[in-house]
Every structure is written in structure tokens, then in C-alpha cells.
Amino acid sequence: MKMNYTNRGPSAELMAAASGTATTLVVDTVTGFPATPFYIIINPDSDQEEVARVTTTSGTSLIVERGVTDTGSVLNTGNAHAVGSRVIHGAVASDFNNLAAVFEALEDPNVPGTVLVPIGKPVSGLIWGDLL
Image 1 (cartoon, rainbow, N blue to C red):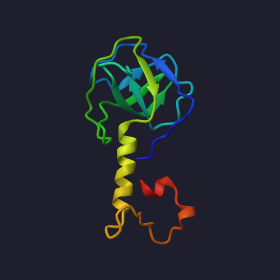
Image 2: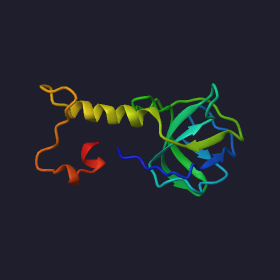
Image 3: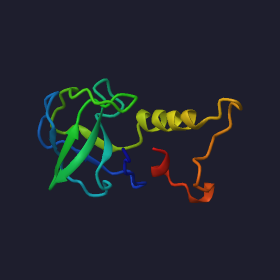
Image 4: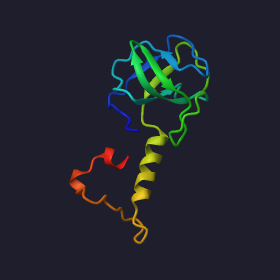
């Protein structure tokens, strides 16, 4: 699944407490966040840190899949978060792990470290969506 990103580093705060299974998170602002889908990190740099995938926004509500793992799987459960918890947008482990898996799958088994280009697609014409 293609995810969206922005360099602006938007952040928000939870306006309502969220249980570990809540799929709607109400934040103070969605300004600066990219178009869906995108990842958020709730309570970054804390022992309650959690990655969620935002699938839809509605006003200042984020509709999310909770507990995203390092491979991008969704556990549908996460940590409880209090009002005022920080919510940021960012690249997460699954982005890099999935990209590495794509290149590994394209690696020429006869020449380790050499990536095979899909037939019929010149290197200059490749886009990430072709690989992911």
C-alpha cells in the first residue's frame, strides 16, 4: 500500500482520551498532515509510543488502524492514550523494512547485490508504485 508523506513535520494533540482499541482519534488539528493514507506516531519517545495508520480524516478526527508492526501488519490494538498526547507524522520501520523486501525480491540470485529491473520498464520510467 502506498503511503503519503510530507516534510513539514506536522503534529497535533489528542483532544479526547483513546482506549487501546479506539479506531477514531480526535485531535486539535489536521493542518499539515498529508493526504491519507499516512502513518502517525502517538506519544513518540515514550514507553507508550504507538504507530497507527490513518486511513481517513473527517474534520479533526483521524480514522486509524492501530498497533502497526515493523512489517506493516495491523494488530488492531494499541496503548491507551490520554488527552493531550502528542501525535506526529513520520516514516516508520515498516516503510524501510518493506522497501528492503522489495529490493531483496528483485535481487538477481546469481549476482548478489544486483537488482533485476522488471522487463519492459526502463530504469528511467520506474516509479515506486511499480515496485511496491
